[in-house]
Image (cartoon, rainbow, N blue to C red):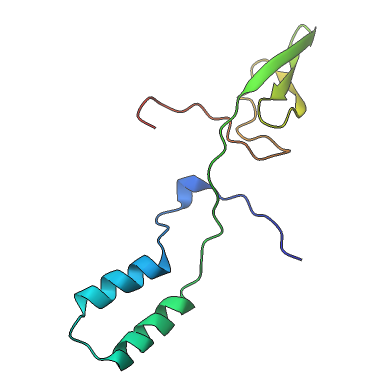
Amino acid sequence: MATDKLVDFDHVTDCISREAAYKTLTEYYHHSSGVQHTVLREALNRVPTADVRPVVRGEWNVVEKPLEKATICECSECKHLIWMYYGDDGWKYCPNCGADMREVSEDG
């Protein structure tokens, strides 16, 4: 049974299309034979693929403040509720849907 994996996008260096790589390399080696093209395609097919998906960004919305030093917050994406205590850094990701709750700068 396959399971979804969350990817830490801070550590993903490059994600490229095999077809784009093949096209670029065959254009670069346009004088090579068809046998070399087959070997090139087979080599590219052996490169492991990354399990990536688009980043979903969310934010914690305060739902209730039942205690002096804590609030109940809701994920803007899946409506999952969590306790958020004053003084901690908060949750960087929603534990339910994986939405990225880190603030994004103006330049992305």
